[in-house]
Image (cartoon, rainbow, N blue to C red; front, side, top):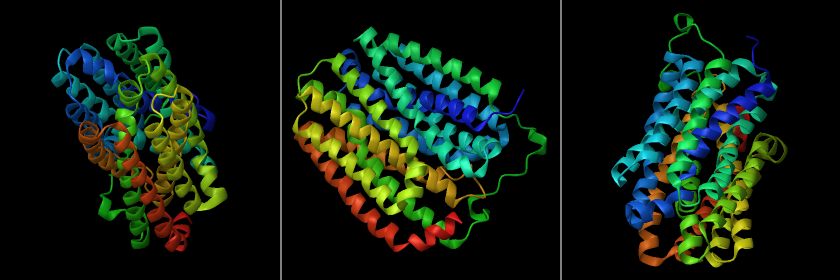
Length: 394
């Protein structure tokens, strides 16, 4: 079979990320109100369950470079999509909150496996000058998956189980596409995977990665409230209908497509501006929803801003991580994406507790303030170390 072109790799990678991130991980919040009603889940419990895919992602992405090396890019990609299907089907059939939690845990594992596998595949088939653009485009596939949830909600309304069965079928198709088109490895010819301590990178590059990961953790925490509780906010606090939340998630997906330009944004405007701009946009989305949860046009604007900010930032962390760890591309996304999930694991139950204690509006305003604080910290750290970062890129 002919090797994938850069465009083909971008399309295939975006599709797999759409399934593992968009459908298996981030669509959960959209269906949470209906799940809470049927399974009698409290706000605090919803926050804990919402944190589980982020938690399992942490462990999965730590293992993902080793898994990719042992299985090869093709088998790792198939495993990621297949696990997404298993997790989605488990959610669809869950008779209780316990099995619902098991399903979202499995979905988080699929997400953690997919990014390093796609990063390694890009390094195999895409010319170096195009890798930043292709990796950012693949990362923006999350937005495609989120947007796909919109017609599912409109068609099935409160029938979230039917929607998840449909998502599981798409995951099966993704696993088949990964098997057919991802590059095949001769595992006996693969070199041994180095440990993190033995990677051929300098001390300055490790420091750059640590700073990047710290900022990613802060952003992950700030974003957690929106992912888990935005639909709940517009329904419970704003009085909007579940079909209107579907349009919100479509706006998140469409806004998030701008994240595909993260690589070009870094090249044109530099790390300091790109990072700060993404966090300001993300924080603005939280403020807007806090102030007007019942105003549908403003809720749509908030969703589009959130999608644009979040996907630009995750694209930023992905592209910069791969640039810093250029000699080991499968490791590039690991630490910043791991840190993002650590922040989300912390932020999700915190948001659930605050929603129960103070309400949606106060919760979203506090998380917006956190986002602005991370923006300020990032401007200082990235500005102070811009010379080191430039060295790492070179």
